[in-house]
Each structure stands twice: as C-alpha cells, then as structure tokens.
Length: 148
Image (cartoon, rainbow, N blue to C red; front, side, top):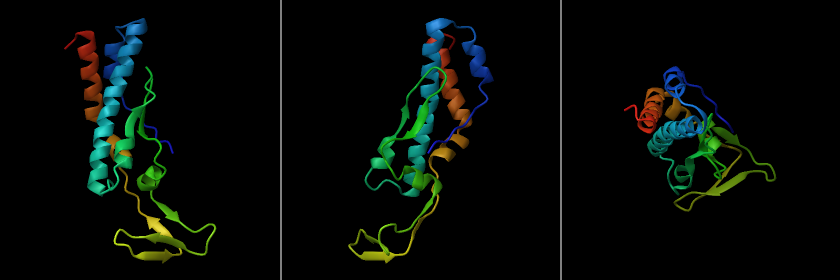
C-alpha cells in the first residue's frame, strides 16, 4: 500500500537552486531524509497513542527507505498488518467456516468476520506536521550549505 503526498517546497527549492551538481543531489537527499525522520517520529507517537505497540514489530519497522535526491519513502516494510491498521480492514474466513484466534487471556474466539477499525498513524504524521517537515528540511539545507 502506498501513500503519496506533496508539500509546497518553494522555499526549499530556492535554497537548493544556488547549488549545482553532486552537492545539490547530496544536500537534497539529506534534506528529504530529515523531513522523513519527522514523519517517522510522529508516526511512532501515533502508534503509541493507538496502543499499537504490543510486540514492537510495527513501531520498529517505521523508517525512511530508499532516499534519493528527488524522493524518499517513509513507512513500514515487512509487517503485513501495517496497512490494515492504517486503513482498517474486515477479515473473513477463506478456507474455513469461521475465523479462530486466541485472546491474550487465553480465550478462544470464533467469528464470521473480524473488523479492524482504521487507526491511521502515517497519514496524520504527514498531514499534521507539514510545517515541521519543511522546517527540518530547511534546517538541514542551511546547515549543509553554511547558510545558518
């Protein structure tokens, strides 16, 4: 599952326009990673607030991936239920008549379906922190260009 978003990066682009070549690419990538790290931190806070930290697998999987000068990915890799929590899901049996699971207290549960409500953690991390993301990017550019 992929979530794409765009920010108005006009101010960041103006700062980067003064640079050329490899320096521009390196600084651009580092700025995107800095913005991505803001999203990572806020997503982890959201996961904690939703109580989605039992094993730590999901919260520990949230990272910045594949940074490039023009983009980076932020999210979870290797945790198959990450999107189910982000978007919600209804699970129905495919090869059996009913679903079966055991609760933490050891009780058997049988059901025709299981509904996991949407508990978005990644999208709000972006939507509610656009200014923080841009500020982190701008600070990184200023630090790396000596324009602090």
